[in-house]
Structure formats: structure tokens, C-alpha cells
Length: 98
Image (cartoon, rainbow, N blue to C red):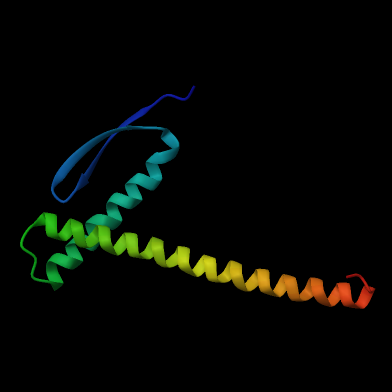
């Protein structure tokens, strides 16, 4: 069993102590850094009332990217499936298989 790692991440002027698997550290630190950068961007470009508003905007931004990727992957899968079906039909036709 792998040892757990204790780290502290700072997000929106708050420190969050976490106990994680060492394999998660890099991803969590990058995520925290991305949140901090996006929050600073929102604070400097938009009239926001408080950190909660900024964090809500960050959450929406990241969640929408995830959802958009999911939609795009579904479209890609549908397109690939249609092309494979057409190829299968063509091969079956040439081989005389029904």
C-alpha cells in the first residue's frame, strides 16, 4: 500500500490541506494553479463582488470545457461508427455476404 502524502494547496486566498496518493500531486497542483490564474483573470476583467463569485465563474468555465469535450467525443464516436458501418457494408457487398 502506497504512503499517503500531505500537501497544502492555496486557492482564492485560502489554504486547503489534503491527504492524497503521491500520483495525484502533480495534477492537483496544476489544477490549483489553473484555478488561481483563471480567478485572477476574472477579477481583473469583470466586476465581481467576492471570491465566491469568482470561484463560481471558474467552476462554470472548467465544467463547460469538460461538457464540451464530452459532446465532441460523442460526435466523433458517432462519425467513426457511421464510417465503420459504411466500410463494413462495402466489404460485405464485395464479398457477397449479407
